Length: 330
Image (cartoon, rainbow, N blue to C red):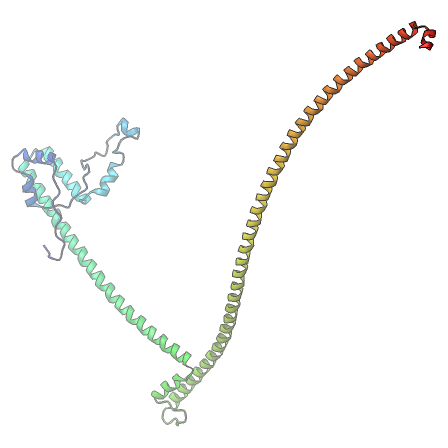
């Protein structure tokens, strides 16, 4: 096996049913299986074959069966490819039909697993080679792109330095390549004309850039003024916010004082009403007592009047009985 490939996975633990099945012939044990081939560990799920024409049970029809989607789950958790599964099923079907011995079945299964193991290892090796090749190709492309980006950044930095320095650096570059402002054309009149046109174009570009830079400075000044104005407005806004907070606090205190005074006034009003009710009750009782006294006094007055009338009648009778002469003498 290729040493660059990952080590084989540990053998899958064989359950007791498989041991009982293979131990019936007395020739196939768990140790023999691990010495013969290795297999990737699989999720412990039921992988018994399901016939295509199987009918659901009544419990499955009611929706309470835990094996409702077992076929889809097995397709997701199967560790072998479909061809290997079909071959294994075909091998067991042939063994049932032909009635071969367990030794022959063991040999066929070992050959099948070895073939599949070799096939999977070859596929894994090819996949690893493709991944390494793809990573190398991507790394090479990334390095080339990085070099291109660095060159572009250097050119942009040089252009920014030329535009922000305020000097005609492009003239110095042209002089490095043989351009002279006062030199004659000689044998390169066409090249000199092209250089002059390029210089004129660069001069116009520089002039345009100067205009743009001036407008940018004006805009920056306006932006600074607006920024200062915004800062002032922000300070005023902060002051107004603080003043509003103070006013809100004052209003809250005044509201609390007003509520306290209103509560005190309501308590005083309740006390006054209670005292008034109590005084009214006392006055009503006094009035009733005075009415009772008045009635009793009126009755006594009537009695006294009657007594006075009776006494007057008695006196009149007595006066009428007395003789006038004796009365004069007396």
